[in-house]
Length: 288
Image (spheres, rainbow, N blue to C red):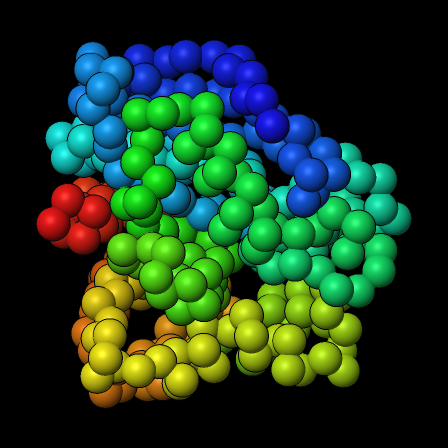
């Protein structure tokens, strides 16, 4: 689908584009932000790799672009950053806007199988297929053969699960405060029960990073995952994130570097602090 660029903003010598397109997977117009580093804006023949950032509950494609400070390191490394939305918008499904942790702003990066959510809540297909294909078609300077993924909270869940389900599609993965074991936390149980059905626990496991990593062949393809969690994160304290479950399940699968950051919380202040580390983690694989 054609992309409409609604704004162009200078950022770290590159350009942040605010875009929209009509998406068939979600049956609505979807907005996204795309950062093109200076290497892609000063030389139209220079292709740059892509890092996809998945945001958390209540967020849009604007939050990470405006508060994450990922453009700083991305401009230095020559990496484009794609900031999708977190759900379809305005499908007029009853209950869509009733709560912050289900429906609008809370697509959980899955393809819903339960009506009425199956009519448009297809964020897994949107993120893994339709949106990147749209970006690669509209922006020829973005290299579709070099893609990495990372995210925050619900988006950390999305990044980990999408990477583990598509190991040949992404070069690397990292996460801030991911919902790492959604089948065992209240956020995940609500989302998976609503999108898949309470009885469909097999489908739950297909989108649970802790369950997925158990089947990962660490000898053939050793993991290298960077995860930052703030010790002062209230959602971690409430048992919504459970990164320790993922870390335990991933033992022997490669390197899973969970960094416990003293004094840091669940906010974008934490992400901005460690943004360069995550971009540099992706750069090892995107530019190597």
